[in-house]
Length: 445
Ligand code: PA5
Image 1 (tube, rainbow, N blue to C red):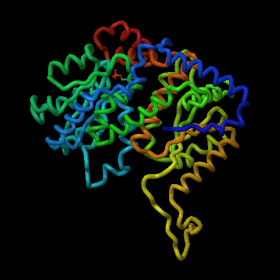
Image 2 (image 1 turned 90 degrees about the horizontal axis):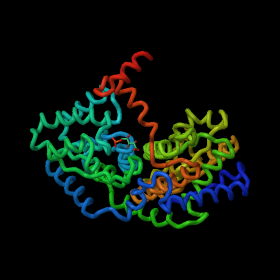
Image 3 (image 1 turned 30 degrees about the vertical axis):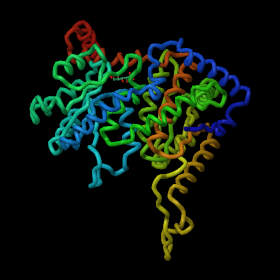
Image 4 (image 1 turned 90 degrees about the vertical axis):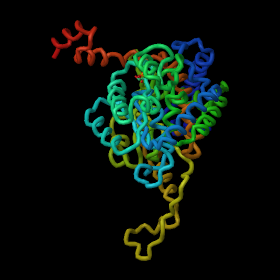
């Protein structure tokens, strides 16, 4: 289970302020747990770890085995936002850094589409598909989102032309609403295996539904470990306490925002495998809190690389941010720095040391420097980057997000602002039904 360390905020706020914000976060905890707060029809994610149906996991397993039997070596997962980032972050975190380049492949490669409208991207995806044995997972809760719909039309036609309609139906799985949406209608008509995104689980909270679990399983990763870790967090975080890490995180980030004027939170990692955890986290907190003119802007850096690009600004630029560092206690692979007789690179002072030791010292040194520079520090600590710890981390962030958004005074579970660009895009693309909007928007440009 993850732990939290907020000692790096001590010099930025007094004990009384922390106590006051802890009280607010505990009230918000009650709102979340009573299930009577705003958006309470979207709380299905809270008990996903303890209520995952065994039958659904068996179905996922069967699909993966069927695809293996067919020799599938490329799975195209099509989706955007919450229908993509959970799977992407887990796959990146749990895969070998060089999985694509290594010759030995234990499972199909999972690539993503439908998360952009780049023509080049889709054309080049088709170049890759032509060299591989292909299956696809199309994910859209609403079943109507444009980006995945466009990508799926192209991938579907490709698979049908290449393998024939009957075989295509066994290579395509849809994950969508139980009853409504174009994707549901299409899947029923084409006879695709479908999984349901529960009505009461929003996209950004759906990583532990088939939305996340099928692509993760298709990549050959440890789904059971992920659920086990999330279950551990579900149990631990349900306990009302001032020490509950989710309460602490919600209290401290709200305090830094409202009292210390920090409007940007930077999620910091020191392991490239965690890059997409930050992308997932940005959606989770950005969409949950950024509304009604409120919210902390979620940003991220990948250290130590970004210390050589963003480090200057964080150290000395405008003092608007605090950092939440993902601290990983131990590396799962070991590389020890050797001795060199000539010592021309002058690195013998590090001889015999693990590279991760240097990484930890970089992290600690940065942390202290940033505190000195006026950047408060929160540390979220995990033992290692494995499935179980990752499951705990993701559930922790979800649960803390609910508490934090209620502490801030917004509905954590809606995203009304996401619609604005869609209306303009449809008007510009002259979608039937948007005639008036098309006329109005053309007058603006
Ligand atoms: O969190 C959310 O609800 C959104 O980011 C959605 O996941 C995203 O817009 C994709 O929607 P859909 O799954 O309906 O295609």
